[in-house]
Length: 191
Length: 340
Image (cartoon, rainbow over all chains, first blue to last red; front, side, top):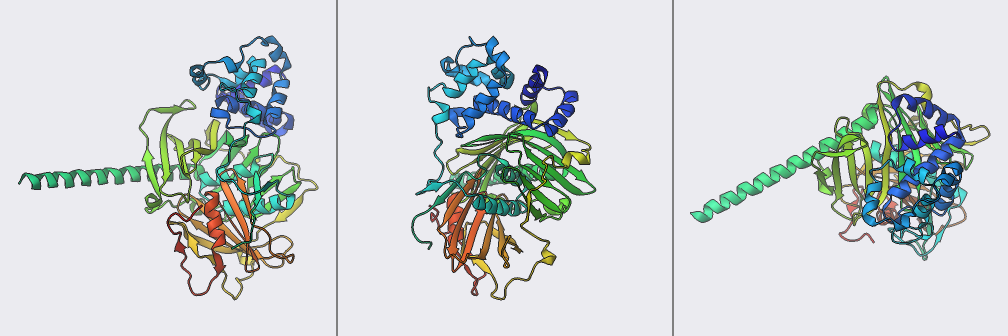
């Protein structure tokens, strides 16, 4: 991936890509899985910097972001002395929302690693688990058959949702690792 | 005399407040209707991030309207390669990580008119609707923030950032009962277009060798409901009403599932009742997919699954109350505070 493409991807995520460049980039994204992966990782960097309180903490998250950073070694080397975000005062964090965040992050290289691994409160992001709204007695990964069955139900259900909720529901189905995030087997007999 | 004047003034103020409140609710409902109409009837191409408490994904949505029918492609740009395409007749969900394509006939038959939601005047019985002041900006656009706050614990809330001109949601947050975000969709790019070429809706997944699973058929081709009349949940949260019911084929099973759809104007809940497995009753299962929750349990030798964009406790209560219909076709509301 060339620096130009990388720059275009990050500008796209920052909402700063000129319209006349957007169509071509979209077509390239459609055709190039590698480019899609890189783009997704860049978006994750932006989300990580925007997200309050370590909200994003998927097990593979740090690895994916690290891979994204590894995808831009030349840039990272140039800026390896950047100040770690852990030392950035909280009031300056708000400013991150207003900056071209993805480009800033990619240009920061090593600093991004610090942002991702240690938030301002010092909590390691990759180890910070978000407590689910509802917890259950036991949890296990869904089997392929369970995933398939629920995916079918979800698609059928989405046909009867409002347009906005349908988009939310189907987006959840598209989400990777894994699409269905929690399956619990409750103890005891069904009522 | 002074007391009567005071009472009249109080009544007047109360009436004004009620009128203002009703007007505000009407205004919010109008924004929601405009948003739904834009989502269903406009041509657009956008990139957004979908974030939950556990993960974030980047996705692209392309929505095309042609001769009164809507087409859509939703694709994950983030490695899984999953893709959902709404064609003229069907919905195709490509899951390359499972080497599976799930095919479902479109419930709305592609008609824009039928796909439009009906929030209805009863919406404010279940949600408090609030329109924010002018002046907010997002993505360089003027937006209006709309709060849809649930009045009880059986449904989620929504905060919507709607474009002033088009009412397209540039950002939306789903919140739980205590107002914490559980799902965020934030556009990073959104282009409204006069025309979107047909090839932009074609899937990019190479599905060669994939298993194609048809989970539904056209209703006309389906067998009739069994003579025993079907099943119903005996308890429903306030405001949820049966929208429709149909039969849903199950891959590998000669018997279809009964599919009931309930809605409160914003959220929908599906209940599937399928003949039980020969291996006996299964333990209850709870699943979570973004803001959607599902709960499966065994009832009278059948597997009952409730799924919807509502809290896990709500789908659990509904699934556990499902029973064969015996005279009482009108489900009761949830007793107050019964959701756990």
